[in-house]
Image 1 (cartoon, one colour):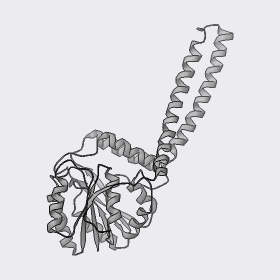
Image 2 (image 1 turned 90 degrees about the horizontal axis):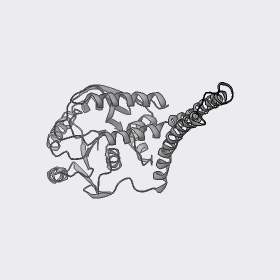
Image 3 (image 1 turned 120 degrees about the vertical axis):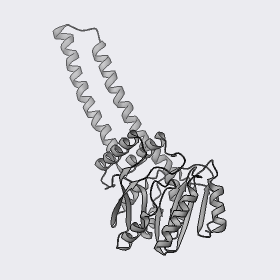
Image 4 (image 1 turned 30 degrees about the horizontal axis):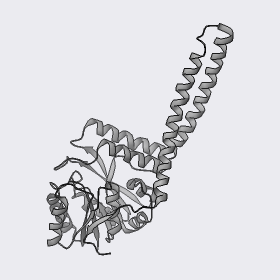
Amino acid sequence: MDLSIIIPIYNEEGNIHKLIERLRGVVAQMNVSCEYIFVNDGSRDRSISLIKALAQTDSSVRYIDFSRNFGHQIAVTAGLDKSIGDAVVIIDADLQDPPELIIEMYRKLKEGNEVVYAKRKARKGESWLKLFTARMFYRILKSITSVNIPVDTGDFRIMDRKIVDVLKAMPEQNKFLRGQISWIGFRQTYVEYERDERHAGETGYTYKKMIRFALDGITGFSNFPLKFASICGFIVSGVAFVVMLYALYTRFISKDYIEGWTSTIISVLFLGGIQLISIGIIGEYISRLSANSRQRPLYIINETNIDE
């Protein structure tokens, strides 16, 4: 198999037929053997029914149906686990990422690169808040990690089989694939494109999921938050020492004070706030250690037409 195309699906019934039509056109131009792996991540619409209908008439259409919603990154991981192509493409079903770009990405892969990712020049149809938060997240992540995670990129990319094999050997429960792929190394390059508006339906990435995704990225590839908590501890200790000197001054020299109020309230506010922040940061790391130590399966498959 020359090419595997992995497509995570969550309530994408309005996009599936248009997507497969464009993907087939791309594969025909490339003249390669291809499998399409649809991973249904607990959709509540007719997505899985449409995919099964496609699979009945096209043997290259494979599907994995999860028992529930496990999340986008886990859905992609399941596709990677089942793929057999020498090259593997990850693409979302909303048609914001143009399938036609795969032709150029595949060409660059054949030139000797192991990873070719798509870098967004513009993002149409998205709110200023989402654009701003995404821009800030990737730049902050890049500045606090030692891994060179490219900015303005998503999961839309093509990878050589050797990259996929390494990813399959990485056991993290809290997946941040674009960071893992950057961490692996090898020759990586990009192609630029303008991201289109969603063809149909609504995005499954709520702000709550985006925050969780951002935390997975930061805690998975940086210990800066722990260093930040330590630095805050030293700073607050210094401030508390100054407040202590001030309290002693007002008590014994200026005599201008309310008995115990100033020093108490300042100390409580500063120390309490920093302690809560530090405990929360440490708790995020501990929760990820706990999740990995339980060694639960990343996903549970309800049904698939892919042979083991």
